[in-house]
Amino acid sequence: MNHPMKASPSIRADFDFKNFTFGIQATDHMLTAAYRNGMWQDYEILPFGNLSINPLSMALHYGQTVFEGLKAYRMEDGAVNIFRLSDHHDRINRSLYRMAMPALPKDLFVGGMEALIRTEESWIINDPDYSLYIRPCVIATEARLGVDASEEYLFMILLSPMRSYYSKNLKVKVETDFIRAAKGGTGAAKNGGNYGATLLPQRLAKEAGFDQIIWLDATERRFIEESGTMNLMVILDGLSLITPPAGETVLKGITRDSILKLAPSIGLEVNEAPIEIADLMQWIEAGRDVEVFGVGTAAIISPIESISYQGNLAYPNTRPDSKMAQLKALLQSIRRGTHGDRFGWNHLV
Ligand SMILES: *Cc1c(COP(=O)(O)O)cnc(C)c1O
Image (tube, rainbow, N blue to C red):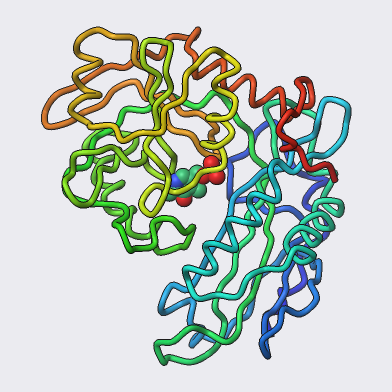
């Protein structure tokens, strides 16, 4: 069960690294491991291909799924680096716990990923604007319609090439009806359902001419939480970086953590504190120097160029000499190995 079918011979040989769309092309191989009889079985590295699963599999009905997103980079000296691998391992285990799913041991998550990345090393070209996106995920595969935690799971690691062009500046709408996460809910976990629930609000925002949403707190619709599926940060007067505290409703982003640790080195004071949307609008309207941006593994930093809230539009600073651009460059140089890795984030394979 669960074995992918045979895939075609190497896709790598014909892949156009200059011109591709993210997320539709997987690499030649994938990793799979099954959980049954209370244990994770050994992993296998197989040609990428379709799965065959029972239609009664619980993941398909009740959304017992969890995922991660991280990246492997080629460093300037040619080494391969999986950025903050052990932090992603810790986080997937927290997400799995929340979804009543079994934890992934280190030799499976870390060891399996290292082995897969070594197999697919030729997909990691030496180009500062390129990375290999890594998508680990776990799905419930027990075939049973009873509403209960599954007793069987499938763990997979899938890889997809990614190019990080300068991310386009975003026009965002502050969402005052829908919410992303509530206290006591699953907002702190990376489970599929959290994303499914944002698709309609996201589509409505797109239809109204926006790129993205800013989520407010579920209780009062007063405090900023996240932007789309990124954490949100504000740099005020070029001096202080403010971001909402991570916890039950604000996901503990690893990019968020990296930026918070790097900010003092470019002279920013860091403040993890609630931000009222009304205050943010007022700071911008009063002409203060305000940078607003989303942070996450996929785009690293996405500058926000306009914010729409209750019929008002505000335009944060998106000048090229912004502090956010400095932070992005610093993070990039750590990954590439051209700046010291003071926090031990680079996991060399
Ligand atoms: C994954 C995710 C983020 C970003 O986390 P990173 O570890 O920085 O990629 C932020 N918010 C939500 C809701 C997420 O799912």
